Image 1: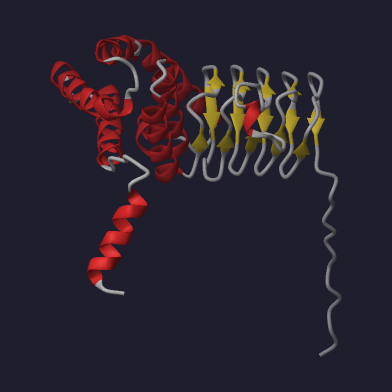
Image 2: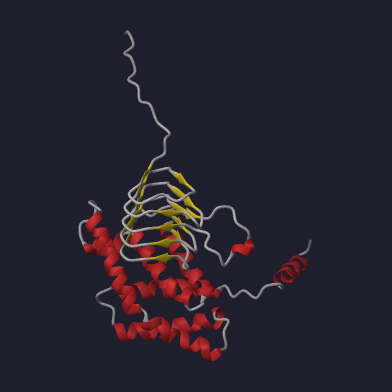
Length: 265
């Protein structure tokens, strides 16, 4: 096959889409600028907000599927939410500091905790999700996923404060509801049972009530599944039905440890 024919065939196969790949890199730049603006003491707020507006509207040209006048108004609605989001994130950071013995100070949480970064980008992308900027919010979420290993859908409803420890491998689905003072560890999945496309607008993911702790690699599935408040879900647990308040959920698999007998020399 000649090069000209290869190019022609690729061109024909691309004709069914109108993807502008630049939106991906622009969204990543916007996400980093937004995080810097909210948390760096040296950030010039007026200058940074102006730069963010330019980036936002540039992305919106591609990401917004509404009439132009409605797309233009989305920035004002989004930026008005930033103080409220920052207040929640400060609560999240302090909750992490209070509950993680390995944390030395609040600066460390903001600068070095992947769980905090994942929560921050979730809270910001969630505001875009509520404004029906679905592609924009998804690209922000996927950027945080790539950076932290934590996959939080922007549609999830997560109260503050919230603590993710270690972060890697966590999955939180679109219709998940998490109430205040919840702590989760690496590898946790809050997901759906087997579903079909026609369930898109139904609740498919679990609800986690206040003061619940979910340990590493636990899997909790289903839209009707609720973990009652003040409960503990042990590591490697598989949960597909609701648990009452003050429960302890354990994986019953046991590991036996034996002492080797000394061999005669």
